[in-house]
Length: 183
Image (cartoon, rainbow, N blue to C red; front, side):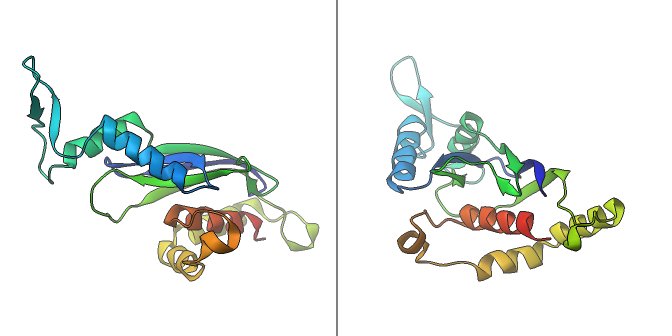
């Protein structure tokens, strides 16, 4: 895509998406500590009139179940990002993160929807819009292929080599950059 809008949507009620500092991992640590103070994951909710905390009634999946839903309500499950010149328009230090609100890691799915103007095909001639749109949609629907490509790019030492935080969402965004640049 040359120019347009990319929408990311976390398809879960206990995680969120955020854009934040990507140069210093201490920012994410501090954000997590702040969230832990505001919405503790111990299963105890608001205060009774006598000053004691009451347990949440919704705890079907554990003590962190309802706190995770509250954390998601305080943040966002959707991001809309501008694309220009085939690249996401992020600030110099910005990164996109999936923020897990449960105590244990969970498998998460993010829906991506892109609307915009595709790049011209090779040779500088405009591609047939209908065929290119269908091909692009089919490629993006192949989640196994995309996941394999993202995982193949995983570098556990990324922080030391490129100065950015190494997260699964960063890898996804890197791959989205690559897709936008492919012709």
